[in-house]
Every structure is written in C-alpha cells, then in structure tokens.
Amino acid sequence: MAFYPPGRLPDSMAMPFEVPLQGNKTLAKVVERINSDVELKAYWRASNITAIDRMGFNDHGPTHVKIVARSALKIMRLLMDAGEVPGIVKSYGLRKEDAEVVVVLAAALHDIGHAVHRDNHEEFSVALAPSIIRRLLDGLYSEGDTIIVMVEVLHAMIAHGSNLQPLTLEASAVRVGDALDMEKGRARIPFSAGSVNIHSVSALAIDKVYITKGDERPIRVEICMNNSAGIFQIDELLRDKIAKTSIRDKMTIVIQVPKEEMRIIEELKL
Image (cartoon, rainbow, N blue to C red; front, top):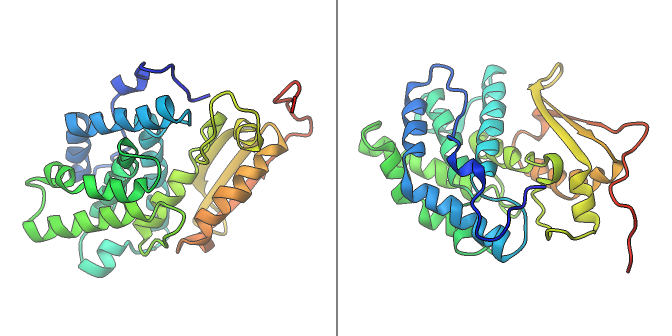
C-alpha cells in the first residue's frame, strides 16, 4: 500500500528522478535540472501532504511522477518507433527528442496542483508550472521554441484529467501513463487508507503492469491481477482514459487473472 504516516516523508524523496535517456542530450539536461530544483521537490512533498496526510488518499507525489514519466516515455517511444508523429513535430517542426522532453516534463509537473487542493488540481498544476518550466528549459531553446515546448507541456498536463481530450500524441502518452500507475494499491482512483470498498479492494488486486512492443499494434499493455476484482479499476478508470485519446487504436490491453484468486479481505462488516 502506498501510504505513509502523517508528517513523514517517503524515502522516495531522496531517490533521483530518472528516465531512460537513450542519447537524448536535451532530456538529460532537463532531468538533471529536475533533480536539483528545490521548488519542484517542495510541490511534490506538498502534493502528498494534501493527498495522503490531509485527505487519506493514495500517493500523488514523487514516486507517482517517476512512474508516470517512465511509462509515458516508453509509450511515446513505441509510438514513434511505429511511425507515429508527435504533435510538436507535426505542428511546429521541432524534433522527436523535444517530444520526449514534453512528455517527461508534463509527467513531472502534472500533479503539483495537489499542493493547493485535490479538486481541480489539473488547473492548479497548470497555473503553478510555467515559471518552473522556463527555469528547467533555460538556455536549451530559443525564446520562441521555449514557449512552444511550454504550451505543449501545459496541454499534456491539463489533459491528463478525465474531462478533457488530449489533442497530441504527447498528451495521450502522459494520460495513459498516469492511469497505468496501478500496481499493488497504487490506483489512480483515490481511496481512503484502511478502507474496505470496491476501490481499495480492486486496487490491491493488481500485481504488475507491463508495457511492451505489440505484435499487431504498437503498444501492448499486460495487466496481471491476483483477483478479478481488479477489473473494476480497468473498467472505471483505464477504459475512459484510453477512450478519449488519439492512441486508443494503437494499444492492446491484455488482462491476466489467475485460476486461483488471492483472498484480499477476510471479512466485511456493515
């Protein structure tokens, strides 16, 4: 379970923010700056104070953004390897490497609005992010290209919410990457610590999520469950998240449920 005692910082705060760079020098510089940015780390901490300590929900801080960044970047690279063109390339003539920067920055910043409140956190995230984005990109792009990268990041950030349609490949990758952080109680549907309901039980039913290159479609997502209750997470969250993206036809979702299911709870009293 991804819960921490009130007032205690998770050990992951000391762990570096890392993604596979694959020779992307601009991305390497951005990741280096993310790891030394005091303001961003403070927002990650405050986001978990709101989500975990004050609301009793699951992690939306540093561990979550690292998982989302790696998943979204993997999705993005699989799509580009299959010939899909990122929005920043198609619309502005920038590089595929810059699309990777957009994805990683959006993942790192998409939930910082939790520092203000869980409700409408997407809007708060977008309001807090521009000065951070500018600082992380300082000197890496011309002024005009800096603005382009920034607005693409902001679009990917706000489109991770359930009510907006992602309009770029990058935003779709971030949205799906966010939803796939669901292993072992890390569901994106908030549920209270210690509660026993369909949200918490279904979250604990998901053991592993694998993102690999598909055979017929560019992306294969395999979700391994220990109990069929995990279907609730897929039906209530992942289905909607994927359905509103431009990559819904680029993915195959495979769900593995064991023949002998693990017991998640012993009893339930109403």
